[in-house]
Length: 78
Image (cartoon, rainbow, N blue to C red; front, side):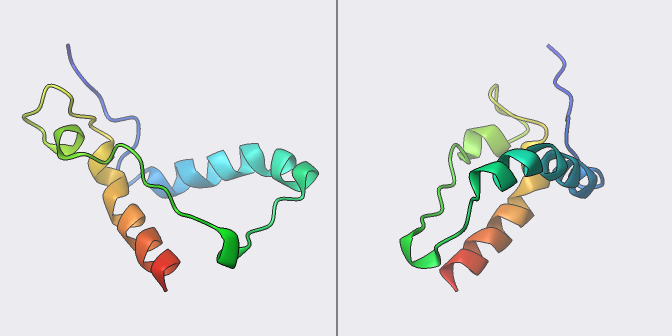
């Protein structure tokens, strides 16, 4: 089975902005606010076998999001 990347390093910013535009009405309606002192960051399923191109479980889009996840972890920790 051929696996294709639905997200690439080149397309990730535009796709992220589109996703944010799509959820914005729901976020506004729910009046969602971040409370840093009561928040947790969960990074799920970023296991090596999803990132390794030789793995049967490889997700072609996964490598494109790793740098952003690393920045988010650093920002959240700060």
